[in-house]
Length: 383
Image 1 (cartoon, rainbow, N blue to C red):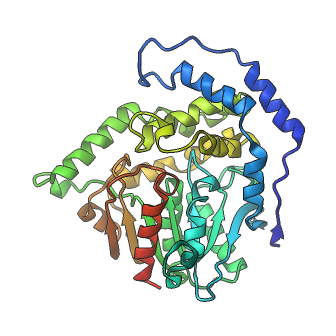
Image 2: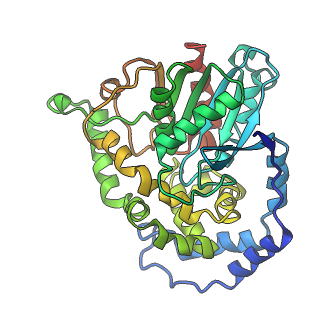
């Protein structure tokens, strides 16, 4: 059932990517002097020229293959995952889940410190055995050929995956879709999940607090309103017509680049430019995990499956509780930044709450040290 997997991209696929980039039919430049209409023409041309002429996929491929890559079949679908065991025998198993427009690439800078803290100046008692799956329809996991692969089914699959690996007691953590999957995993497999760490927790504003809002809560409400106006277009497209959007994302590397890189500008704590917080190679490494397996459409379909459920958690009514011990990290550039008292209405056992000084939606990618610090701090309380 569990099989070793090696990433081996044929050279002709890389040559095809270069040819497509060089043959792009470009749109004219934007009519503004900033990013308010999307990724500026000059930057996307510069980034794509680098992608075609200088970017080295083989170095990234070798780095990924140096880790333990595995594949398994769960519920009829092939799932790819990294399985990096700690040298510490008493390490806690942890399933770490990415979201859109991310990938397992997000976790590259935290795998070492989390699995082998002693080698990075940390306490060996904080060690984890890491399991980093690629979501169905993402990366090197299979693309679902039928509807139904939403966050509930994914969470159930992760429970099976951890059972296949022999882990009877484990933690879960994640961001973006990984937050929702980890939350549902805690509800579905509470017998085995010792705790969840969420970046951030998804919980709606509490109307009972509206007469007594803190300044942070007022800002959080304004951010949600602003996000609804200016940041949700991609989500509505994914949720309603993912197939239509998918043709361009699978066929055109420039379309894929602009579609995803705009979110790295908007959602990171980057002070106006994504390369202020992530390198050009890091941005392209992540893009390659969409381009090479052709997952632009299949990744978008997760919104069609589950975004209504997640939207209810963000801005609707609290209809269920999560009773597994929970740690929460709310980074300052997140779009959803619930207060602790709002989150406590849904998460009944918050053991750890952190509001780091910097960082955005891709916390492990942007601020790996802060992310590792929070993950360690929470799971110390539930080991």
